[in-house]
Length: 236
Image (cartoon, rainbow, N blue to C red):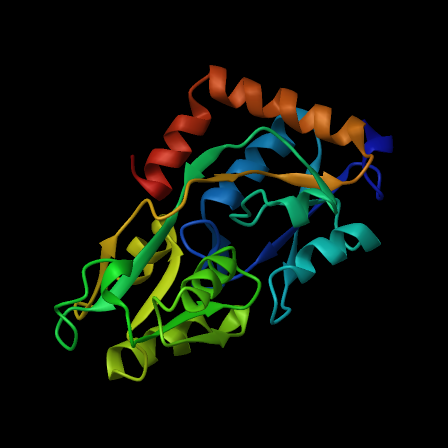
């Protein structure tokens, strides 16, 4: 097992923080679905879990770090895309979700779906899987413009939506439900815009580690741990 990771006995996990419910700060501690899942997988494999915090402005850079060997795997609410699949080997998905639309229900109560965005500005994080979705909407004339925020700029993006500087935000539903809990003016008005599979990934060609994580994940499915963690952090 020690040969599976760059540092024997240690599994270094790349994660972008914050991205609740997958990763978030609770005081000085990092918690979340991915944190608990990877700790449980390390327990199954007899490895020590180590968080490696990714701080790039573009989320896609986390996979460049994986290629360079900056971490052994990525577990960061990351959905499988063709571009990412070319850089990393993905395990079996542990969650299926999709893009959601968040609006300010006081300033723009008429916006209930992406069909109501004509002439409006929508925002996403740079490198997020929502980016190609909204760029396609712009090309089709369904939105007036797209505003890109750095990956760690999600709080500023939410603040701008509250202030009316943008009309909507698109991001996967579990994250947006979490982030709007304490912002009563903001609400998820549409879900299921896409269907995306979220999975752990390892460096291309590291089949041994991928197979080991697969076996551990299967054990967590069989003993109910994965279902419990998913219910705790992401609901049904």
